[in-house]
Image (cartoon, rainbow, N blue to C red):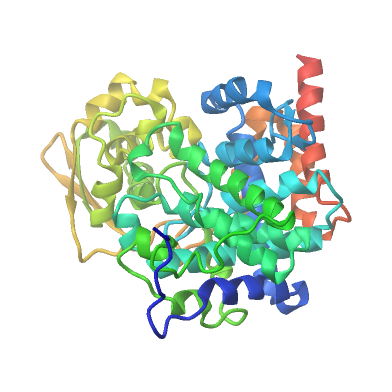
Amino acid sequence: MSGHQPTPPGTPNVTEILADWVIDIQGADIPNEIRYEGLRTFVNWVGCAVGGASHETVDAALKALMPFSGKATSSVLGRAEKMDALHAALLNGITSHVLDYDDTHLKTIIHPAGPVASAILALAETRKISGYDFITALIVGVEVECRIGNSVYPDHYDRGWHITGTAGVFGAAAAAGKLLGLNKQQMRWAFGLAGTQSSGFREQFGTMTKSFHPGRAAQNGLCSALMAQAGFDSSERVIEAPRGFACVMSDKQDWSEIIDGLGDHWEAGLNSYKPFACGIVIHPAIDGCIQLRDELGDRVSEVESLHLDAHPLVLELTGKRDPKTGLEGKFSVFHSAACALLRGDGAPTAFTDEVVRAPEIVALRDAVTATANPDRHSASVRIEAKMRDGTTVTKEVERALGSRDKPLSDEQVTEKFRVQSALVIGEAATDRLLDIAWKSADLDDVAEVARVSSEAVRKKGAAA
């Protein structure tokens, strides 16, 4: 029996329209402020990829896959190893997401850079690509994945799909296809190939496999573009077909979110950057607890319990009551609040196995309660701290740091990069990598960013 069903009357040719736009859009068509946000997206991604490079998740992935890698053309940022481009895309997608410190498109909770930047930097090490063309492709890929995400969110996400993986594969295919110079026919095939590889389950949150999703999306998106370039055909209506991506994987299909305003309204300009290394819905609680800690001073040791009045997604996504590992801690608002109050920490150092099991953290964590309030904004929280003398201290966070209303500045993005990268490659090498990352849009060969990272790791290894 054929898998095809007639597309309902009035359904636009979404895949064709989107693919044609990807091929037609030029760098000069992208407003300067969007191009700059694309640069910020890339800088933040490089810092996260290097920062996550020494995690045990990456060690395990490299141990499993290195024996099967092809020609070593492309870097794993923050590591000495090089792999073939497809495997490097996978590994950099893992490294950049494993700390849950990466960027977020707040409308969909997609982490846009992981699938896209991981795919195209690996590709850039196999051929010369200018920084200008690279940033153009990055923005185009982010735009594609976020628009596709908008069209099915929140129904798709509520079903249990990890939207970074499922929508991200389209963004990776678009960006790679743009840089490969695909024609319109090939780009439609690339989307078809990407769509059939769209996956990732929210069940995996709190495990190593969560970071596998953007890595596989990067790898599969790049693979899709390469196969389409070679003439490997596919459905040309994979997004909108009755048995295609949106209709199979979501109860909501809003085609206008994908095709309306292409090139005029930019989802890529709405990207945000995390100040804390965990699920973004926890950020208001961490922000508030750090503020409360600063206000209490020495009295912080007198806090007996905490109660959080939070958005419902906080408990839905991060309600792990008794996390056992650092990765699980990233999905425990109870752990995050306790650690932020007692240590003032929401960085990667707050989410290690050791900290999650620390007795004083566990004791306060067990005294944290939370209520889901549907009237709350997702970036807000009310915290009530009950003191041992029976008094109560409250803290209201209207909008958390890192939200659209309180975005990170360039200086804060830089400091975030520096703190996590220095732990992996050292301070001097981090300064050099930061400098080249901020200049990446003007480079003749954007692979210089990867080369600087690899050189830093080699020098550190030689000095050890």
